[in-house]
Image (tube, rainbow, N blue to C red):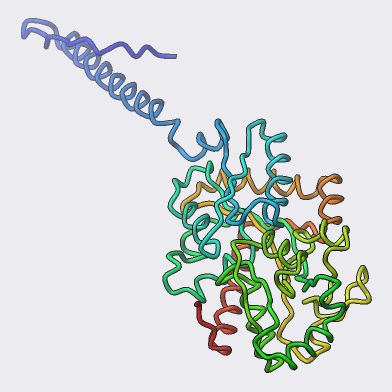
Length: 355
């Protein structure tokens, strides 16, 4: 070890001193100067160390982490965010707080995260509408790829259509009613620019029928009104509708999977009524603002993957009709890009425009 005391200023040797003594004095002076500069650089590095990415990840998280859900409480994204947030809180020994910021077809919550500091303390629990909005709304204000850092996929699920059992008991009944009463059969959606909006547009294009769309601020209020009979039908995942289905207030009448599901063999696919395009796999994933440090991304991805693989989470997801599925950040980015391409094509081919 060496001392970092300030270098002592040396007086140049007098002419009458011997040559050896003069050389030794200068060597001692230059050595002190070199040591002083080394210590100065070391002090700067030590002072800045806390701001380096590696140091940031080592201390992460040191305060509450916010998981923003751009939907109201009670929907599938909210349920999944709370389950995963609780697990991350346990493993990282810090609070992961779910913050519901619904409205404007998910834009309010999504833009809040896009504009947040990329420090890992503001995250977005996104689902498919995250890739839909920019294709439908030119003024959306964000790019799903450029403005966010993907962390990991969390789970996937089919989409279902539901109706109050007293209104329709099958998809065939709903189609027959829409054919007999053009523009009068109502379908609730989770808001303009959401997946359910586009799926309703695809249903209209595929059947040649006209439905009356009723936009809500999320799936939870849309499903509640469908159960209450205020609207005729609604699209959503089972994660959102499971309690109402279990209480027999809603009946599943259609599914967006390519084939009938083993768990619901009696429920027909939309392909069976001639709408082959209406095959949609819903997903949920975790993202941060653009510029999130790779070390923070890696830590969040690893801990989220552990949470998704936990037996209790898998059991809860199964009850919600969600297949647990983690991914690397790169794989999640590829998925987001593929969905943006798909919805861009669907919007263009069906001439879909936001109201």
